[in-house]
Image (cartoon, rainbow, N blue to C red; front, side, top):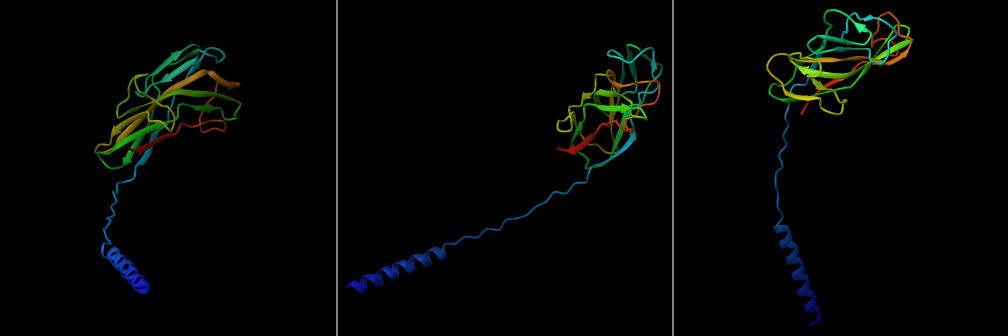
Length: 196
């Protein structure tokens, strides 16, 4: 009697195991990929504040604002005539119809050739395709934050950059000479364009 019970239990266990195998399920998981053209940028021009006349020592209140439409506005002991040149970057490759984010640093620094004096460029802003008056562009907020967003169109899209040369940020001895962010002590402005 005992052996019959053991045998019956073994049969039930085997039956359950077989039943489990019979109910195994299978599904096919597909793989997909969406390829799009990489974004390519080409710099057309750097920001050029042009020639600035200085009436005295450079201090707070001395500013030159370069707008994305190339116009210049002077204050304090800074003055001048004519326009400057806004920074210009073309988007030469990408997938049309895609949403693009523009990110940029808020400031940079121009210094003299001997790195004995420097002035910050701050209040950097951008405009897409068409330059606008100072303050009417989209303010840069750092490379981790979108300054503006737009849809990539057919052909070449353009990002324009403007900013303010701020006498309050002067360091060292600022004299009548050329200043550039490419010099030692200078700091260029980083622009990033990426997909949404």
